[in-house]
Length: 261
Figure 1 (cartoon, rainbow, N blue to C red):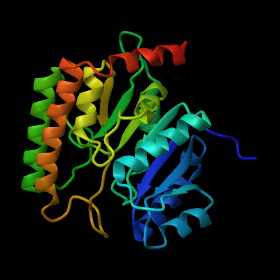
Figure 2: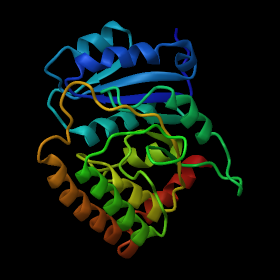
Figure 3: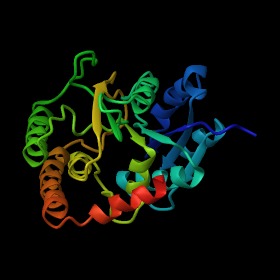
Figure 4: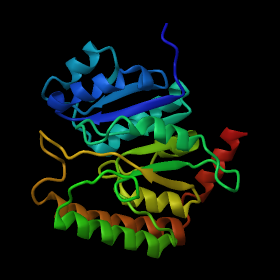
């Protein structure tokens, strides 16, 4: 029987048959395989994504209908809770997130800060010293500046890469995310960072190595980035009202202490 690791790597995938093989090959290398198990969240792909992942003997959850990026991740968190993992590292299936980031994020999750606290969320950032260069369109540059500003205005915290999909999560974080109404089912992004900072979760960033997509279609292609920016802005504002004014999730955060004790 395969021994379960501390870390579960969750990979949401939709029609990624052309890109997921090289990614899985790298994840199967000893330096990664010895610290992490892999879970593919196959969001009703129409291509061979499901077959490829199962053939390589990875755990796969396949949706009957396309549920969206956020729903796939949340179901992965529920899986991680039920299986007893201590950490989750989420990454994309399109090859943009280099697997060399996994040991670095794992190490950061297990490293205390100057106050003796562990981070709850570790973001892989494209914009810190030591990060790889990453091509960005003008629209995306504007979006990054905009979201950084909103988060800083709402929380007082500076986050260089609030839309990074490369994230490491502590047990208490993905447990909270797995609960009803605690996670955006479509585009969990800067809005979730705003939420977690307002709720007192500790967010840390580390330099990340990322690559441009070489094949397939991004979920932010065409006019989608414009619509995404409007949707995310309103979502961030709604999150701020929910957590700062209405304080709707304070009790849920306090409940986490019962699980930890």
